[in-house]
Image (cartoon, rainbow, N blue to C red; front, side):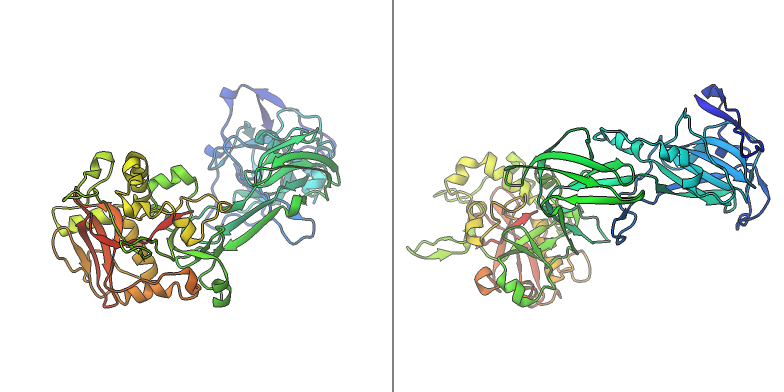
Length: 565
């Protein structure tokens, strides 16, 4: 039941009588009988009476014990959250414990109200709203929120078991005060009336600072299967942190067992002593969180252990690192959808800095040329891969062919189809370009087994190759003035600059032993098909030309692999 409130003047030593009414009789204050002010509103200090007020509420969060941080662990209010609000003018209580509820967009008063508010009144709020309570308020002139709600604060007891989010949120007592309205608005910034204990388990990750796209955190190592024992059970905030609301200057004993990133069991027991209200105290187990802020860009270097170096890192540092690839795509709209199913969060595609090789016909020699499909002696190396899920790229016009090729970003899916649906023929050597990825990690030097989750190396599709050329060579691949149509199945561009040199330029800082340079006069297989007997290639040079053609599957061309992390 929601309280019915009558707006009357009360002497400070008296409390108003609170009555209840059925929910059906509630008066939605913010939706009716509202007296609007002008554009500038009523200035603070005005004695004008207002028929209603609009309320907004934010959480000021917690400060660190050393004062270096503020606003940490602020709570975002959700639909169904409620506050209680009081109004005081000239030391007199005008309104007592009005219930405001948030619907996800605005706060609405659920208490039936008669009378009005004043622009020069002081307004007090607390969270979470209590339907019934036995504490009183102290409505003195100029009282702070902490003074006004002193009985509430002194008697507040957080839940012992806060492992469920609802229990954690309902333990977070907050109070706020606004002296006078702004127009008919009261904007509460709520201060924590409790302290916060934080237990951080060991975790190493990158937090990306990109503003044009949202890139999820990239976790290098973390814990799993954490279990807290004892009376104090904290809430996990979906990161490496466990949060527990306490009273000011309280000492709380914690005991936790967990598994490390290597799967080994570990544990910690200790005491966290909280500071004053509004301040958090943190215990960092084995260093706690180790976060590196990073602006993710095409051209960044991907190392064998899965770590990253900015493309702006000095040459001496890059050349000394175990670089195995260069970031070539960060647009989440251009990732193979299957990658999300396999990896969860997808951060980027990486182009290998080295090329795969295989034994050549001449004994003791190697070659970096591969056929896409070879039937092993048949005069025609043809197979309809559409039967297992490939989509052939050969449009009725060159514009249609380009659109199909550009939209084809399913390289990982194609490699998976060959590895699963053509497994026997792959093992028999009938898909050399795809087979080149299977043991490439050994030649490339990674990714290591200890590296964070990744897709492993695979042959990129036609659309993924277009994105490589766009991101690393600055290519403008679209139907525009640089378009140089040939036939309906071949698409070409001119005036694209020194493409080969641009691709090699992004590897300038990489040690010579860790890279294979691109060459003129070559073509590279994609994993995309054009028909039963042909698949698609890309080729480019330093004269500004880029071509995307079909070629017979048993022809030999170069391969450059990618992976996703």
